[in-house]
Length: 196
Image 1 (tube, helix red, strand yellow):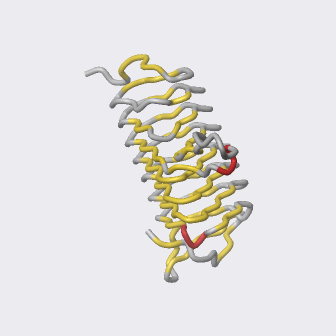
Image 2 (cartoon, one colour):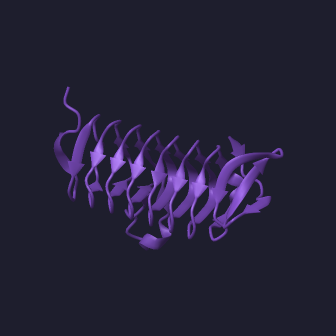
Image 3 (spheres, helix red, strand yellow):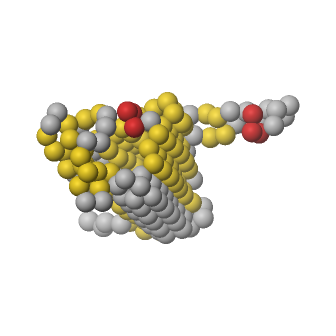
């Protein structure tokens, strides 16, 4: 894994990352807007497709081997970190906001238009407008081999255990056990994903 420092060589419509003169096979489309690129660590075979917007204020992004950020995703790291595990991906039009930490395991599929929101806005001070009350760190943990259906929302403080499935359009407000299927708004347990 290497720290993304600069793009050196252009290949077709993609830019190919070279580290110490060796090809890393990490492709970042030239139409990707990245603010804070010195805080992105990239392993081999990472792909970031066109139209993505990535902004890092005070944190880092770690993209492990063979990960994909598909087109038109918005990723904002206010503080903390985002870790995308080996062979995992964000499909088109996902939004990721991290005030704290989002840790995604291996072989995770995150469908299009999903929202992962780690951290919360403060609101309890009656003397101060909401906008000026700041925020509180939060976390999301998505373990290995999880499938999150299109348009789902994963809120702060959630852990989705390995082998679980989240139905399309769900709003996940509670942590989910191993090999479970949840769906709905708010998401509710449907059945076990794998019965032995």
